[in-house]
Image 1 (tube, rainbow, N blue to C red):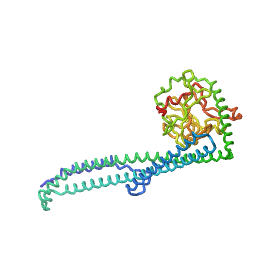
Image 2 (cartoon, rainbow, N blue to C red; image 1 turned 90 degrees about the vertical axis):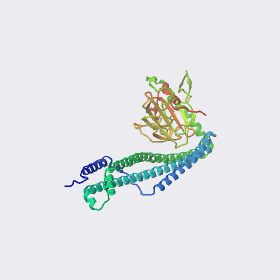
Image 3 (cartoon, one colour; image 1 turned 30 degrees about the vertical axis):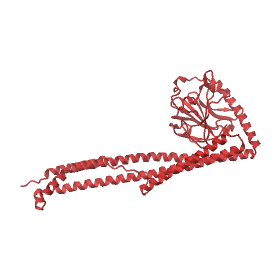
Length: 442
């Protein structure tokens, strides 16, 4: 009795089928849930993304022009007219920044949609590859159930028989190639999925930033209205307010300095990061320093009465302010509630994991809360002009973290009202420039 030519191959085909099933179990197509994707042309999506990016570039130029105007008016004489001009330019800069943030949100949404299309395309391709393999397996079984004699009687030529045999033996190579394609498509899906999750996180951050920017616009409008109301649109009234504000600030600072001078620092500065090691990152994307730290005292740069106890950065109201290091929010508040125009205004105190601490002063918007963990680069608020400030800027004081604490104290210069702000022994104040990256003063 004749044996079937391919009875041996039946075992091979069965093994290949089991291998195929095992392969798809390993490389199963990952499903991406949680986002719905509108079907559209991928090229059209990319065109929209490119258009938004061009809009962002144009808005950056507009913001820069307004920022330069804010800076210019800040350097001019302190008059009511210049102050209003500065606030109006600042409001325009923030509104342009809001438009830019909205465009960034559009780009993130469009990118997520495009990535969704890529995922769907890869899933479809994997499905087609799977169907192709399954058809090949079925064809082999069909051929395997037909004996050589039956194929000859069916009129097949010798060449056709050899081709059929060769096709069956080459199936394994074909399957391996298909498996490689499945792996490649799966890798594409995983990459797109990771990028989509990243875009989603960026989207949440941008939406939070947009909300904060709108608050900064409200702050700027209120500042302009209050200035006009308090001065009754009279230059002499504005100058009188400036003089009173300067006197209040001087009295309040002396009061704070006298108290901090009596405090003793019991920590060990030797455990702090070495100077010049860039232990802190810049808190702003664009750095322009308008005033440096203190003055030399006994060969050390310490905060002394009549000197500057931090570093000032020139920025328009509403500029994003970032954490200079990773750590915790040790406190946040507003000295204007107790003693308007005398000190930090809206402030945030961060204590970093490396033993340093910084206070961010004169903010318009605070975006963090006490006890919150932050990483370097996280947004903590927006710059402003609160507290004692003759123009929009960001003030940063630095200390040894174990020395500074948030205290509630009554102020004689503020009529006995209780103020809340960071307090540190004088000797624990540090020059922030020793820990920031190198800065070109030019």
